[in-house]
Image 1 (cartoon, rainbow, N blue to C red):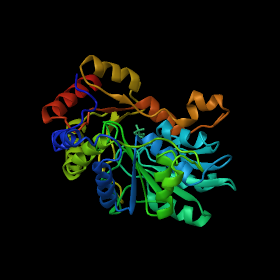
Image 2 (cartoon, rainbow, N blue to C red; image 1 turned 180 degrees about the horizontal axis):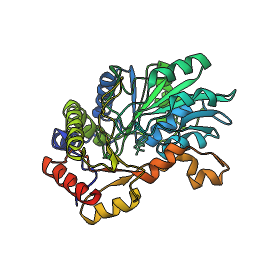
Image 3 (tube, rainbow, N blue to C red; image 1 turned 180 degrees about the vertical axis):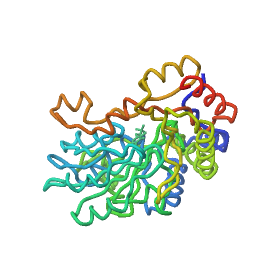
Image 4 (cartoon, helix red, strand yellow; image 1 turned 135 degrees about the vertical axis):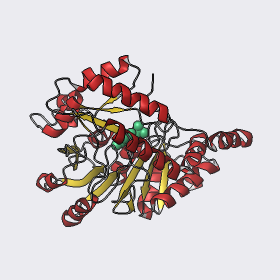
Length: 371
Ligand SMILES: *Cc1c(COP(=O)(O)O)cnc(C)c1O
């Protein structure tokens, strides 16, 4: 079986992990955590970074740190991971959804303004699969209506928008270091910002809002979480970040290989290579079956699995999620592009450990199955 994702861990990961064990620094106070935060902030172009346990908790922290709460509306794409919507639902807020573009999978920026109400507090922009969402018009809207902006750059470390790094936009941005992301720490995430007060709030929220005053150590003014990243995770993260340029080049090489090897399959849409503001980074390599092709993505994925090719389905849109419908959210709402992409889309192996031989094998099997 060619797995849909396999990470590459053959840099300094082992060396740094041994350092943790040899020095006894395995908890969250170790030096790799600070170093990883500093290097991430520097790389992305933010002033501050707060390492946390995963991307989902990073989003929850961002929502709480910005003061979003009961009754507040946050505009976001329906075609995304549930982490985005549930972060808002968990504080009693309401996600307000926008459909996605059929070709780039990103939020339809033109549809955002009509969703703004008196209750709108923020826009959560999410970069999907390899191309950033068109950021500037969103930042313009946020300025015009005095809204906060949360940037979910979980899939897009190293990608740029008009030459500026993803993860540097809006009030607060987040990354995930799950094994299928551009760099990994096994599980892990990060919250980045330029505002010092927001930085202090996030550090406090990460650590149970312990009092900074040593005399009041166990006296709490607020409720937080324990979202501390360990030195072990940060050691792996730092080793991964050292190779970010190589990783991005490899992702693009995989993407370009597939573009070439699959270009003559008439029944599929291949991902957009570039827009006027970015070149695809191919975090994953998404395939969309054309309308005239009779089979669903599910059927094709099964045939590929039978021939040893791992795949993943596309996101199931937020407005269709039973858990939200049961809460009375998004009833009767319809976003046709996101719905259709779920039926027609899937992605194929593109992990950093993928070899040229495997890419050729996947492509050959794709040709066979879709001929
Ligand atoms: C992976 C991902 C997350 C969640 O990150 P985890 O570390 O898995 O919790 C959030 N947003 C997007 C867009 C993602 O792709």
